Image (cartoon, rainbow, N blue to C red; front, side, top):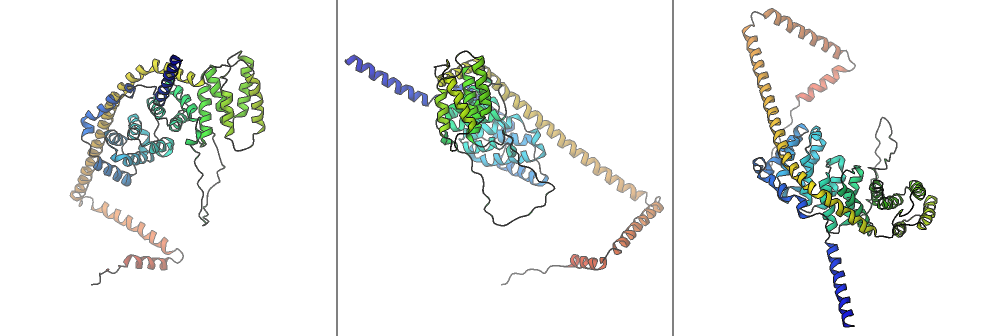
Length: 452
């Protein structure tokens, strides 16, 4: 009896330890972050001599004066900051670059550096804002950033943030990396355990009472693209599950695709797939636990079930009677991630370290080309000034030789001015308008003196 009690106590301690470890779960190793290789950029002489305060002011002034800024200058600023003092400034200059004609020249390292910068200092709200507002910032993560962010959010049990990153992968329709695909499915599945952490953004309400009428050439009809216009977390997560699920030709892929389509309210597509699977797949069509998950998802709906949803539920009842997989859905996802990490992690680390070195060479090369272009513009401007000076000297030296031609030119200009004056005076009430214009130009405002 004592032995049994001791065994039970040991098992309970093991389970508690396992739960604690699950809370700290991370699928990617510390080495995957390539922190040492990433921080090596600070050894560059180019980045070491950056005065961030002065550089930010110069970038702001250039944008205000000419409406654009250099993409490589923005890249140098973002890559050289090593504290959280300039987060707002970094976001602002990236926005200004996006609004300028130089937006097409943004360097790949700028995307990566801004994401890692915000992530490093735990500015998660700003990170999501930048990544989701592609029009105003134009920052797009690569696969390496996707993996880093999702893995870190999963470790911190911030599954809502992990799911938000997963939806970005779906919106960009990227399926080229197996680790990213697996983490997306896992993030969405874990988020749906507690979907209240990510709420649908509220529609802004115009409370102004003033009526403003604007003349427009034509009225645009409302348009919803069912992709980038999606804002409801349920739709975004559902479409992400469906998107990645359809690229997996196995029971896990079918399970995720089915759940995603029902979340996304694509009941017609779900019906077609259910009929197709029951005709073509003999057994292990989906995981059995998906039926309970779908019931839980639909319990969150506020509206009454539609006719299409009822048809889907009828087909689900038929599918439930088939031979389905009784295994664990979450374990299947975890095994998929571990397998992908085992295959790809070392290759990703090696590739990313090389990418960091390549970015340094690209930055230096682009900066040298920019300096050559500036030097060329200066030389061209100097040549134009010399030509202008020489032309003026030539006019002085050859004045008496070309006196008659000069006088003819002057008479021609005077004749054109006379004709223009006649045309203006022939206009209706031109004399009154000219007098008013002369009076306005001749007006001298009085001096404002302080009273003692």
